[in-house]
Image (cartoon, rainbow, N blue to C red; front, side):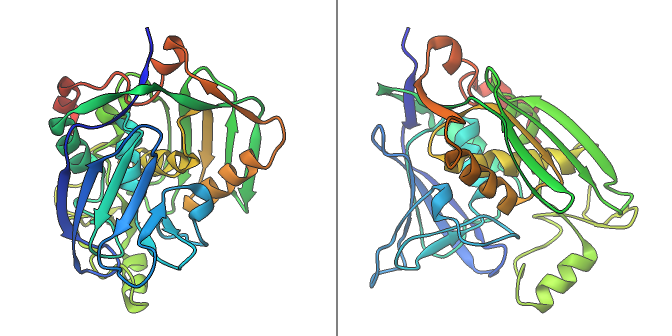
Length: 309
């Protein structure tokens, strides 16, 4: 049995506002041929190259969200949630068209992306899946924050966070991302922040589209967003969602164990750069049925959506 690459059966449209600009954005995720990968196209750009590859080496210095940029300086920001959704449902090839510089934030998670794309259906393609198999541990750090990749049979993840705010506190979670677990356990977990951070960002002209509807905002022991958290450990689940989106910029699925402690977007990007710059740390492999069955998205079905908020 051969496990093949996948794309969407038909285009899927999303509309919302950009988190940082607060401006309306329309985005269409288009099917793409085998071996195409994930690319973004800025429809509002006519005087420069509008295409940007969703790859780790296209990421400039950015900490609040994940950005990519091409050689002409054309970029797209806040791509981590749509990238996590594509990886989590097993889509390897897509062209993402949008009429502005940001992916719409929607509810601050990947749930709406996942629901809509699963409803459209996944189309298998006539080309085998190739994956990045981690052969030896690679680790990076920034102060108290660390991130590492080490050998494993599939893609597994352990993440720990530690916040002064009692509403979040210390959280740790382990997840094996095989068999649709991203959809069931992570995809509806929303971005979160402290009220003081929101105020500081908005004074600096950032997070202008942020609200209690697209982020969980906390202040000490109080959750300010209506309805509170969807999960007791929603904060660390969202950090794992972000990490999957950032790791998907490797350009192929990863077979390995990711461990993050207080890690953010840039540290995950630095980890990929360290992996690819370390001789003997990885190899590209054509996935056997056993390997492919353990990749995120390979076991996803409509029944998994019953677990999504």
